[in-house]
Length: 169
View 1 (tube, rainbow, N blue to C red):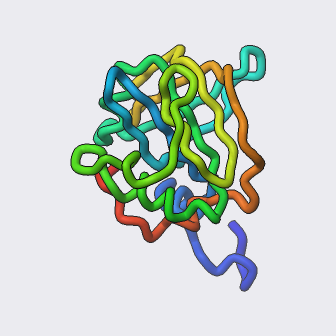
View 2: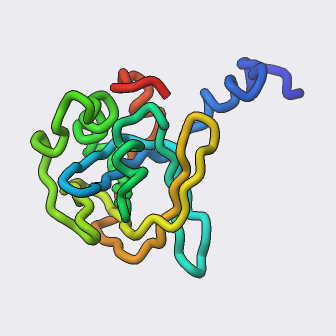
């Protein structure tokens, strides 16, 4: 255990540890039939080099999870801090009640997924695996497409902690 003034906060259990870890935030978008959906996510990571695959976890309570469950593909948008308003839209509003895409700029992308116009980068590809992992559904995509520019500085969890989510986790 560390002592002294250098680490005055004591973390008691995994919940405390997770609350102090910061990680990049992103927006996932998808479409199934005529329905579009998207939400702010914090649980995501590259999970394979060859083939290039990416893991995205979406809360099972989220409208986006319902749409993604039958969607062929996902896009993930890596945001810069300049994209805070976009993060707020996709983090605080719910697709159950609001058409988020009517409130932002986007274009149709690969597989019909909406690609948001923002200051960062994006990847997209077909969903190759789905699995419920607690209160989230994990989805792995083959990252076939990508573009944009490096998000600098990248939007972090610490930047969105005060958001009020449209659904509980």
